[in-house]
Amino acid sequence: MKKRLAILFLFVIALTSCANLQPPQTLDRIKANLECLPYQKEMNWKEISANLGEPDLFPLPEPGTDLSKNARVYLGKVIIFYTGMKEVQEGSKVRFQEIITSLEICRKK
Amino acid sequence: MLSLNDLLQKAGSRLQVFKNFHLKADRDLTEKLTVCIPDMHLLEKGPIDIFLDGHQEYEERFLSLLDFLLSLKQEEGAGLEIIQIGDFFDLWKAKGNTNLILSYYTNIVGLLGKVKPQYVVGNHDIDLVRWYKDQKETFGRKWRHYTTVSGKLRVIYEHGFQADFFNNQDSWSGVIGREITKIVGMMEYIDPDIDEVLGSAWDSVVRVFDKYNVFTPVNDPQGFNAHEYLRYYVNLLSRYNSGQTFDHYGPEDMDLGLVVIGHTHNARLVQMPQDERIYYLLDCGAWVHGKHEIGVVSGKDMAVCQWS
Image (tube, rainbow over all chains, first blue to last red; front, side):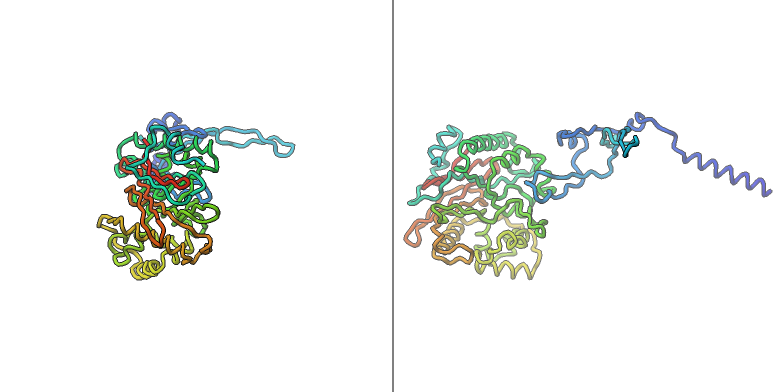
């Protein structure tokens, strides 16, 4: 009886663990439910606001400026970082760092 | 220095004297061509943005004025002074201080930055500095600006709400209650001498503010009495000229004859004799609800002009 109970317990544990495991997904599949905008340096703010709507938070301008330097905050958005490897020298040795090569800001469809 | 006529000629048909609001003083008022841009009340281009007022062409018209001023600045250099006379932004209604307004009016803010105006603070944009008191940041905003001729002060430029304080001491919680709430905490910070400038009015402000701390928002439309403004400012000029100031200017520095304001959104140019001389009040008008006026002072000339 004890042996049967132990087997049943292990079976339940194994079953629930498997249910929680996320199957691997491709980026395309993840992005299927998102609308994304690639970030580019010096892109026009209007592109961001047209895609993401009005920001949730808009802090005060930075002191010491002519009011033109601002920050805008979106809550609950998805950010996708694209990464790559960069070779660096550490003394006489070659090493590698993972760096951000591009960025996408996304909202759920 | 360009004269008013030179300016009108350079601008061609785009600039005209408004309603014959043109007077000549008996002495020079400025040593530079001085152009004053009154209330704009910029917001985020929504339905309550009274600068745009639903007409994109209003922004285009203002941009054409800035284009003209920028090219004039490049020609005249220090011979041209531009003063934004307050209420550049309408922070009473803004969604997030100046932050989002900037994103809707990038050209206006950028061009104004290039012509480098003097910024006088108005009651609707004094909030800009509220959160920066500890850092002593004013973003270049002044309580008041002066111009001088031969070392003597001749013209005061301020927004004009200061007269409201003086003229409505008996009804703080009524017509201008909200203004007091917004402004009183910043007044001394922007102008440490404000208590002396306003005299007994300042004591009333402080007393009432201390007592109630926060006022009921105003329901009544703001009432303006044109004569009260004139009387307040003529008395102010007279008082300063007679040496009744408590700031660093002595009577030998004073020969004030003109005050340039905005605030009321109603352009006018009026004069009043007092102390055996003539004092002037130039209200530049506004750039809201389709209005398109500027104040111009050059030498003895003063005028309200319209830009088309």
